[in-house]
Image 1: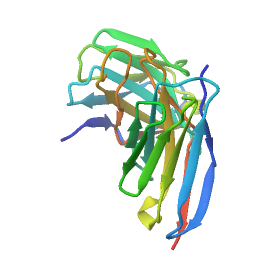
Image 2 (image 1 turned 120 degrees about the vertical axis):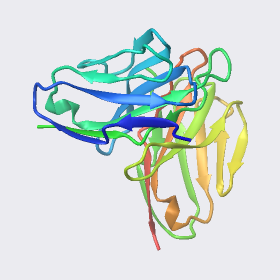
Image 3 (image 1 turned 60 degrees about the vertical axis):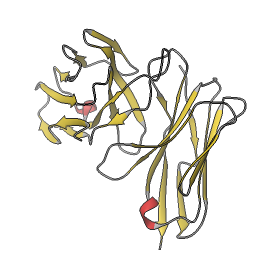
Length: 116
Length: 111
């Protein structure tokens, strides 16, 4: 079982460059999430999606964009990379237990991004 | 917004000791979950709690959903080296479509 797959695992960007972090899941989960984790800190929600064609902002959406054209894929785009975006990014997915509950989140292994 | 306060932030213990950590909030949550993150990996679910007062075990791990719905506890008995990692609590309000995470408790074990 692949679960949640993120690529790339590591990337170094120059200030002002753009890139897309890829996330795909093979569990047919409706809900998908992007979190960032700064050193020694917890997880902060960037964007999330409850289904194809539906996205919404989390706590820290500035500087990022997302799209959800299929159930499986939820890419995260950085348009103009800044040093403040140096972080580890985690994609997660879940299948709601019933209306109102996200269900348990399954996480990818993370993508470590450094902006210099 | 809703916040979860997790304590302690870090723990340094001897192998074989029991561990307790907790998570509190000023808001009521309908679901509590506990995750463990090992170095270089994503968080992995340990225990999920869905009812106030619920006590659930997973091997040497036991977690409880507080009666007030504003807190949760995780206990690890007879710690072993592979328990090392960061433990996160997470909570969800019914209908919120997303989880709120605590800051994490970093567990270090001296053999």
